[in-house]
Amino acid sequence: MLSKTEAVVLKAMKYRETSKIVTLYTRKFGKINVIAKGAMLTTSKFGASLEPMSYILAVLYKKETRELQFLSQADVIKPFLNLYSDYNKMTLGLSICELVYKLIKFEEGNQNIFKLLVDTLDKLNEVRKNEINLLWFFIIHLLEESGFKINFNSCVLCGEKFTEKNLAQKIFFVVDKGGFLCSKCGFDKGENSYSIATFKSLAWLERAKIESVTNLKIQSNINSEMQNLLSDYIKAHFDEPVNLKSLEIYYKLK
Image 1 (spheres, rainbow, N blue to C red):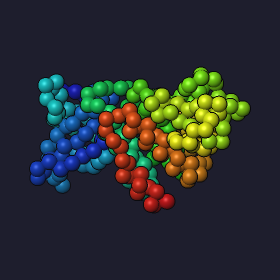
Image 2: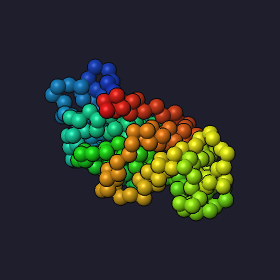
Image 3: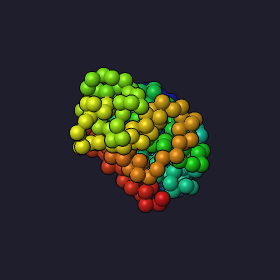
Image 4: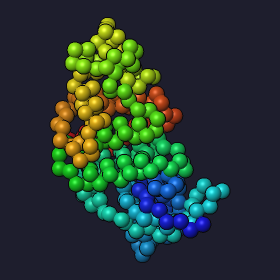
């Protein structure tokens, strides 16, 4: 059946001499693999539309019993040019695509995840400061859409709502419960403890609108803590281990 759908290119690899196998996250079908015949040729009709992070309108022949679909046409909907000219933005954009590629199962469509992906790449393309905040924002909301929402509102043991009075300078994160402990429940616990600044930064990003995400300046040590916390949480709840190689490059460039 001939289908047309918006899509983001997550990954592309050479197939034989002239073609590519491309992984797309589509609005209609979720994550799928397609073959783009002739995509490696200099005269290819696909041009640069199959580069990772491209936001395209894909025309494909989709058959339910086939794992590899046939891509007939791909046209760029909106070019995210800054993601390719700015190395910092490129590494973050590739990290975002890598997360979707590794964590989301094939053919499980989710309109909210698709919108989150496109909106985050679009915002990353245009921002001029604190661009790494968009990666944390994306992960927090991807986890929520995947059924692993982190609780920033109340203690996961006693249920008491967080206030300035019941938050210690070091706050304990319970990975298997997806939340934090108040100062009473977290007393004398050292492992998996994070600074209050890390907790407040993550909580702010969880509540923020995407338009204002980059307004917050986060110190490098807090970014490192947030990466560790989110990586541990992903590792505990997903089968696929995530080692964001692109993010390592980002830190080296900074």
